[in-house]
Image (cartoon, rainbow, N blue to C red; front, top):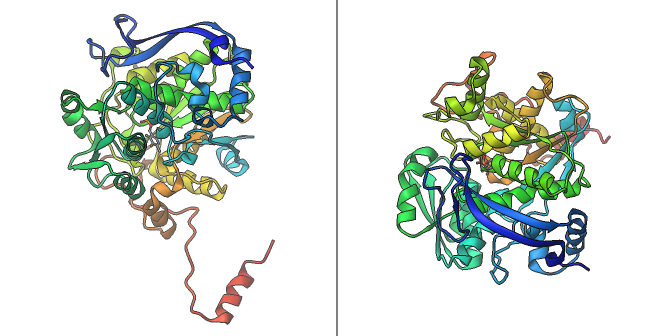
Length: 466
Ligand SMILES: *Cc1c(COP(=O)(O)O)cnc(C)c1O
C-alpha cells in the first residue's frame, strides 16, 4: 500500500495574512494569531505531486487501521493538514467520524425532496469544536506550550478543557457569566479547567482578555487560532468522502464567530484545487436575528449596491439569542467567512427565535436532536426554500454543530411551554414584533398520573399501537 509520502510527496507550510494586499508570511512555528497588519492568518500549504485518487485510497484503508491517528476523523485526512513535524505528538480523543443522517421528516418541513444532517454532536465532547481542538492542542504541544486559554460561549471551553486534560496541559477558560448552557459549563468543570466567569458578554470579554492572555505567554485557542480552523475544515472532507466525493448543491451551517464557515470554505477550495472534488457546493450561513451582523452587512451591501468589504462589519452591540453558541455580535472571522461566501457563491440568512425553536423540535422528532444553535440550519433552509434560493430538488447537507444534551433547560422549557425570549434587545422579525414567549408548536408535555392501573390503561388506550 502507498503511504502518505508517496501520494503527497512534498508540502511547504507557512502562515499567511488573509488580506491579499498585505500577503505577509510567517513561519508555521511563530506564535501569533494576527498578522502585523491586524488581520487574521491562514495556514497556507503548497502541495506538490498530490495524487487525489491515491490519497482517497489511503484514507479508505486507514479507516480499518488501529493507529490512533487513523481512528481520528480529523487526522485520518492528515495529507490536508500537514502542519506538524513528523515526530510531533498528536492529542486525539478520536474526534470526527460523525454520521451523515437522512432526515425525510425535516426535509418535508423545509420543503425539500431530500435533506441529510452531518451531526457534529456525535463528537467526544458533543460539538464540532473537537475537530479543531485536536489540531489546536496538538500544535500547542508541538510549540512546548503548557497552558492554553480561550474565551467561549461554551462548547469551545468544554472541548479545550477535555483536550488539554487528555494531553497534559492546563486549561484556562473565560466565559460570559450566566450566558452558557449548563451542559457545557459542567463539562469544563469536570475536565478540570480553571474557569473564570466574567460579568460581561462574549464580545466584551474577548476584547478584555485577548491581548492579556498572549502577553502572559498563554497559548490562545479561540478560532482566531489558524490551526483550529485546519481541524474544522476536515468536517467537509469527511462529508465529501461520505458522499462518494460528489459535492452537494448546498452546505448549511450556523454562524456565530464565523470560524467554522471560514474553515468549510477553505477546506472546499483546497479539495477542489487538489482534484478531490469536481465542483464547489454553495455555503449558506444562518444567524439568529438578534445577533446577525454578517447578515445585516450583506443586506446593506445589496440594498446600497456596494461592496461589503468597503462597508465593513458593524458589530451588534448587545447580541441576543437563546442559541447561546451563536450569541456573538462582533465575529472575529467575518473577513474569512465573507471571502468563503464569495468563493462559493454563498448566502447568509437570519432566523427568529420561534423559527429556531420549532426547527429544533422537528430535528428531535426525526430521532436526531441537537442544541439550539444547530437548529438554525433547518430554520434557515426552510426560509431559503420559500424564497426560492434553495430549490426543492437541490441536494442539501445541514451541519448540526452540537448535541441535544448540551442545553437541557432550553429543551425542557420549550416542551413545557415556558421558553421565553431573551429580555433585552430588538427582535424585529419580518412579520413585525415577536410575541413575548415562544409557542411550543411541537411541544410534548409529560403527563402525570397517579399510581392507578385504570388511569394508566385509559392513557394507553388513547395512544393505540400503530
Ligand atoms: C461554536 C458553535 C457555533 C458557531 O460556530 P462559529 O465557528 O463560531 O461560527 C454554532 N453552533 C455550536 C453548537 C457551536 O458550539
